[in-house]
Image 1 (spheres, rainbow, N blue to C red):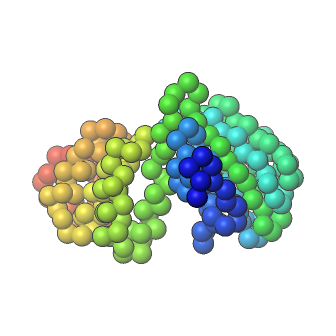
Image 2: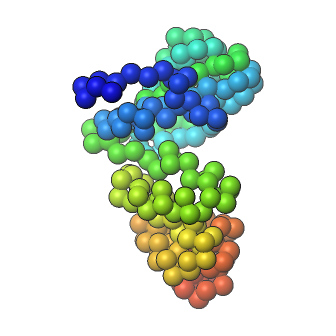
Length: 210
């Protein structure tokens, strides 16, 4: 490792899901950057989404294979080397591979603002689904205050604590999450990860009745 620069390959960083966590690997602070690869033609390489919560503009580059992008109602044929720049965060975008091994590099950030990463890159949903609750709690605790969407970290931390039977801690972090982002109240009412605290009167006071 050199203090001034580092190198890696997209393939070398890739995990089992096809995600190459470039930003996390290098600790990039100025912008978000990641890559995704799928094995088969027809696989979805980018889920349909918008960037309204983040305000990010995003640039995508097809670095291998061939993809079909959608941007709202428009369809974009995207062979290797194609660049798709989505300026408006409200545009719903996504991509499907047309060839096996299609790989897309994505770069994003909010114009005029200092970059902060978003908590999706923690991938704690997989840990919670695999009952790795202690590991998820540790990861989320370490992440507090480091991500732009801190409410999401707090909410997932509440889920991990509820699954661990740590009722008071879970309710405290859920209260903070809802205070920062009121829409989490609606999610909490139906979230199975919070079942162990749903009958507590404090839960109803935080999220309201279903």
